[in-house]
Image (cartoon, rainbow, N blue to C red):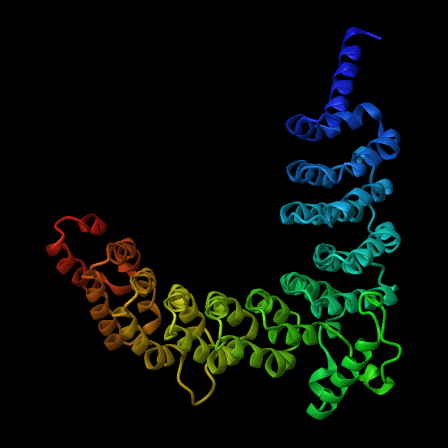
Length: 486
């Protein structure tokens, strides 16, 4: 053995000692160098000795656990490649149940990274690994007594579902059932997690079969559905929901069980009525993703009434997210829904009682109007530009004098993007009058936002109109914007 080999062995021995040290910083530094240790041990000893040792240290400091979770996500090759990736699941499963959120989130992310590595290596064989190892892991997390494990299960179900073999419909249905029961969990933290990953779950299901995302619940009569809910409540009161998580309700009345399946649209409807505003808020963020996985009829019949209700939600934070996501919703729902449903909701948000909501909607004003103008014009109906002049421009008049300086600042950042969509000369002149008012606003951010946009809009308005904006302002602030005409 030469001197370099001996030095390497001494270094490895030192790192192993530091992993066992009582000093937190030493353990943290050694954890960051796990790949060096594993390279010296070799894949087999890494699987049989190092991984079990690391698993036993899961009760360590949170900062060390975070580093461990990060390292294990990129540790597949160190344990011998994707064929032995399941050896990493034990410590990552334990890390997915800890109380600290950042550690738990990083552990589930690492689990998804391991899943990706297995899938990239051999998509066909990865199905077997996901059936034998990843699905049982997710199932155990979903059945956990502590809510932290169930939160982690929410983040893994979409990934696991997408990697299962196509012919394993039994396990795929069980994944849907597990997710639906997590949506109905008694802990709001779990329901929040389910709402956060509802979009991912929708995409995973849609890639397999779009019909799986939808549900027959819209076809049930109101009275029938109420009867079903009563039977469901009675059934759940007799059984332990946790013990039966992931199993079908075999004792449920057969006619109702066959006509109702706990699929994504039903889950969306359930979460939309959640008493926790944080759940509804996260649901709005995923609404466009879920809607994109649905047929047009289900979008109109089921999703749109929920979006409409969100725009009137009692929580201003929910309405804020609706305003922020309004353009994404337009892209998904299309021209007709944009004109008939989303525009009225958007104009209502522009006039909302909360300044934060008005600000969010005003920031989306230009982008929303571009989409409105681009909508298809039905025969005998006004164009998008005409609708904007009729329904939106009067609200812009009100926003110019809004008591909130943040709303006015948002307007000044967006108003210069509107003239190209107005078309009508009189409407453009009217809008320029509003610009002149904003140029005299006492709040500096309002004026600065307009100055930043003046040069961009000169080509749209023409030189004469552009000069009409610059000249009065230049007389008040000599030379402050003259460089924009260069």
